[in-house]
Length: 183
Image: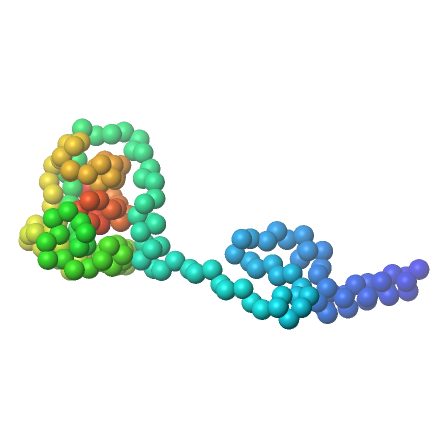
């Protein structure tokens, strides 16, 4: 009996080592990222299918900026803001700007990443912002009430921030912003 059990175990281990699936492998769910290929039945079936194109970094950036902004716990009557604005050629008030929307998004994301690595907000404003006078003001917008910002998405992001909190990259009709609420 023990000998039969040893033979069965040996065969099981042998089949698992030669490409057979162990119980844990065969029961593991697959993700959409994994390819599950059916065995080829002819030469034409064996030809690989063209790979689905992956989105460009710019497209991924644009997708990220379109993410839902969490609702604030309490909506203040006014906030004091500073921002970094990265414009693109199709944005409102973007005279002389030649970068594409995707390029602007990536530049704004680079600015945010620079801050996450420890650079000060003021230094990032000086290096990245296209807002007039931003370098000398540190990107200060000032005290604003609802409706003062001229763009619903920008307003939504600004009023969702806590004091001394920085937003993710937010797209408005003016370009891409990183907003800092200071009060």
